[in-house]
Length: 211
Image: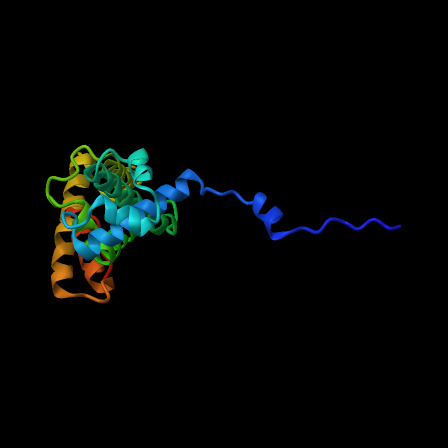
């Protein structure tokens, strides 16, 4: 008599499937749900119960990651700024290592373009636009990135710059300030606008701008 091979039932397949999602996936889903609700309803009107219902998790899961809604908002701010930084890095990395003018232009354009696309999230996670992030590590990483471009250009003779950190702070503040004007104007394509801003930054550095 031939032996029959045991059939694999749906239940036995399920036994090999993890019943819980990885912690990083669960956390990302929780934060994404909160961000959607904050944008739709506002931070004050959104409750923790709303967030866990949207994310389809137990309330205990929320408190496993965040002591309060405010702590989640802080984490969303760090998440936003880290994603912003990654957009800048990708843009700058497309330029040649020794093209300091091009790298600064790419940095300025990516800043403005990304901000115009994401300002609604920015305004949710950073309610105090002017004083939100004096100790924000991710924000300081963006300044360090810009300072690295300025110092590299100075070393290569692209511009003379006695105090790169101060210049980086000025350019950072200026780019975000003019981006608010672009938002008010409702620009769909910020290419020409970003070029004008980059021209002004280069002029401040004493570098030649494109004609």
